[in-house]
Structures are given as structure tokens and as C-alpha cells.
Length: 149
Image 1 (tube, one colour):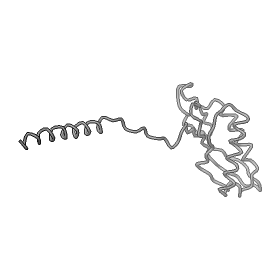
Image 2 (spheres, one colour):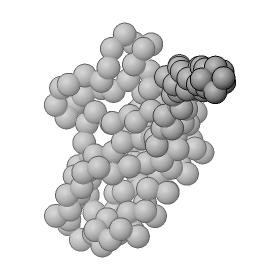
Image 3 (spheres, rainbow, N blue to C red):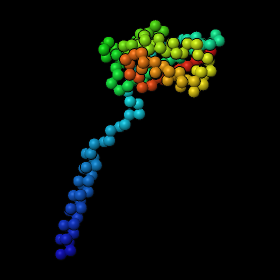
Image 4 (spheres, rainbow, N blue to C red):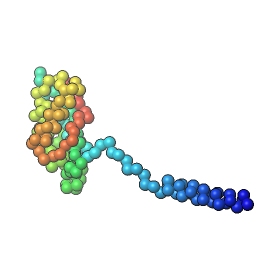
């Protein structure tokens, strides 16, 4: 009589284990949370600008575009060209953005670009001017490469 009761206990337990295993394999994986929201747009040509005291800076700028802001690549049918200093990017208002960056950085003291706090201030000023003067939605301005002489 005891063997008959074991069957009634073992079979449902095995079914529960099988259903649990099937559920764990079939349940959807959690969506991966992105650390960078938006599109990174690397300006295709670097900047060579004059600083105070006869010094100069060569820097590259990247923009973190807001989600939904197009970098213009799909509208023109291609990405940024891979030419030299005269490369034209795909951002619709790139010439205006380049002008803003040139105006903000030109004439700065060398210490402003060498010190992290100074770079942060300059990046914020560029960001504010882009927001005021263009329709480009930028979350952040990045300076991935910088040489001051």
C-alpha cells in the first residue's frame, strides 16, 4: 500500500521539476540596459586652434547625440568620409557646430585645456552654445584626443 502512495507523490513532484525547468529555459532574458543612450558622433576632422601666449591645441571632438537625434548618415546614404583634414561629416549642422567649438576654444589659456576642471568648463560652454545656436540635440561633448603645445 505504501508503494502506491509513493507513485502519487513522485509523479507530481517530477512533473513540477520538469515544468520548472521548462519555464526557466523558456522565460525571456532580461533586456540589456545600455550604458550609453544615444548616438556617438565623432567629428571627422580634428581641430588645430590657437591658444593664448602663442600656444596651440590639436583636439578631436565627439558628440553624444540625444536619442532620436540623427547624425545625418542615413539621409546622405553613407557615413563620414575617411579623408584627411578636409573631411566632411554627416551631421546636418556640422559647420555651425565646428564654428562654435572654434570660437569657444580659441584664445583659451593652455592651463584651461590641460586641467580636467578647465576641460569640463570648456565642454559645458560648447554644449550650451550648441543648444542655443543649433537644432542639434546633444547630451554631452567629449574630447577623446588632445594635444597642447
